[in-house]
Image (cartoon, rainbow, N blue to C red):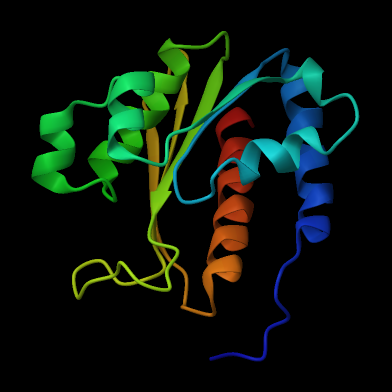
Length: 169
């Protein structure tokens, strides 16, 4: 445990504003594909007035079936490597990019807890991918110390927003 002050959604608004400003300056749109955050990334972006100039859409694909049906993630991939994996995060981001009018797509898949973790994939394990037109898809594997479900989800949003910003700069 740490004495670090927990994040709140309000803490993420300035970062969301920076992401939107960078997207608008670049003339780009973003799409999100979210599992463990359940729409919080898109919600954080759209909390900012004027976000419609840069946010195309958000896919909330919490179930494995939704990942396959909405984003085209192969069911056999999920079966083989698990939904919380680099491969699935990349497939989610690339699927969101292909199924939207966005230039950039971010995806997140992870274990926010309190249950569901394992020795190989403990609670707090998150995979984030960013797909951009004309660029290789980037990936970040995170482990957020288990300070509770809310904290893990908010740290995931923060890292995803930062990943979008890095991809467009």
